[in-house]
Amino acid sequence: MPIDRFGLAIATVDPVAIAAFESATHAVAAHKPGAPAALDAALAVKGGLAGAADRLEARIETNPGEFLIAKLAHSLRFMTGDAMGMLTSVDRTLVALRKDHPGHGFMLGCRAFALEELGAFDGAEKLGRLAVEIEPEDSWAIHAVGHVHEMTGRAADGLAWIESRRPTWTHCNNFALHMSWHAALLHLELGRVGVALDIFDTEVWPRASDDFRDMSNAVALLARIEQFGVDVGARWQGPAAIAARRARDTTLTFAALHNLIALVSSGHIDAARELAASLEMPSIGGDDQESVRAGVGRPLARAILGLADRVARPVDFASILRELPRVGGSNAQRDVFTRLLASMAADRHDAGALETILSVRGKLKRDDRFAALSRERLKTPPRRLIA
Image (cartoon, rainbow, N blue to C red; front, side):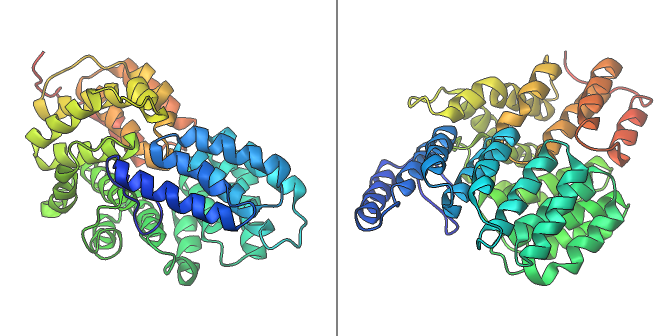
């Protein structure tokens, strides 16, 4: 599987690339004690995200002070949507780290993010601020506190926090684009649609990128803006062109579903059908992403494709919501899917389904403008869909 410049998979499995990657990690392991952790992490390149995290965390038991191992495990748990796993993994490391260890502040930032994802917002904010105080350059801790602001409905405070630390995160590889995404969401919640669009153009999608993280930022922001009834013009075409080239790429379900939204929203229906069909095909290797596709990826893809076909396909909202964390990413990132489900329920005038969706969503974040808008949509004539 090709790896991008920041170390994450961006395309379908390539046996030649896999072999080269394994050869390199074996070579490193032969010359550096402790480097076999790289081999464990290499499992993720084959789609075994959870298995790679398990093996890395086993090393934490015997190498509790190995900061890099802990950070890798944390990242992999994040990519599988395992918030409790993130917290457990970080705590194993923190127990062994002295407060003067160079990685101590960074691990507090990881713990803050895990707490935020578990809904422990007060503890997350307190710990995240402490982490930034200890390690001012920790963009992940800054990010964790920003999440708390968003999920607790404190948009103005969140913007003040993020912007005051822009000099730190603005040079943090393409994570800077993600931080700008957060800023745009907060502006959008405050009703500043024009500002959100400007941030999209200049900071979230300043140039075309096939990095799935950049794609998820762009897709989720445009989808949110459109849900407020705003025409985003030709902005879908850039992400859609990338998505069309990846119509057979189902390596990461999280990425594939964002690509599908881009294709449907831009009217690239043939490519959308091709990607949905690719998601329906079982993986021969049986990696953990196959389980994710079966449990939530395929049902959600069918629902999204129904928007393109204007077909009122049966949607098991409760099942998708229950399994949605397995897609990976954060609660804020997965909200793009929850919002789509809520919009579907509202368009069908299914008040029961809508309230179920908004109730589940309300446990993750305070009701916002979107929740109010969704309830208002129940009062409008239902969309004409083919039964």
